[in-house]
Length: 246
Ligand code: UDP
Image (cartoon, rainbow, N blue to C red; front, top):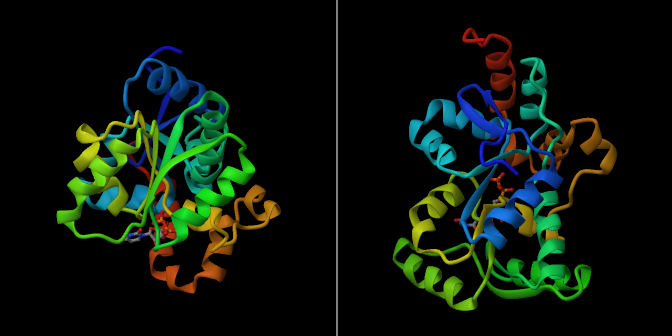
């Protein structure tokens, strides 16, 4: 695949317009075959609004090698601009696709993040789901800044090829960019609440809600504490509709 990937600009944030299959092929080739480290971010409407309002977070997103359209809002915005993306690429699904690839191709993975015990449970379930998968290590996501060098060393010594970082937004993007040069894994991806879903601690929306772009509503109903964060969604929609630059 050519190195210039198709992109869309959503309110100043560059999103890569690739299907999940294309993302997987690209990462397999560049990161896992050629050994060029690829940092992957998953963008949703909340993150685009955060990037718009906080230049430091915008720079963190821009520094990622791949930004996939994780949220229905981002997919809608691209379509509204007349330049659709091939499909929604939810981080949780891309993670499963990468785990399937890793299990078939002898690549090791590391799960870093979430509450104590969650990464281990996610690993146990992933090994059942993907026979042959090697989880080289796990580490919970509660630590102080002084622990970071030790965590990086632990990840590197594990021999992991793919690292999934589940610290939530924006902590995971900050941690990844601060440590990427020191990290040995070739794929480093921020995955938010994915380990909670994989461990069975958080339920994913029913498929019909995913298909009808209502996953955000399901998350709001299950976790009402997300209400304030989700006020970004109508602001995102207004900003896209009234985007004067377009
Ligand atoms: N988390 C963590 N360390 C922290 C803060 C959060 O490991 O200091 C974890 C938290 O336990 C949860 C994930 O990060 O597993 C955030 O999940 P959420 O669904 O909120 O992700 P987001 O929507 O921010 O991507």
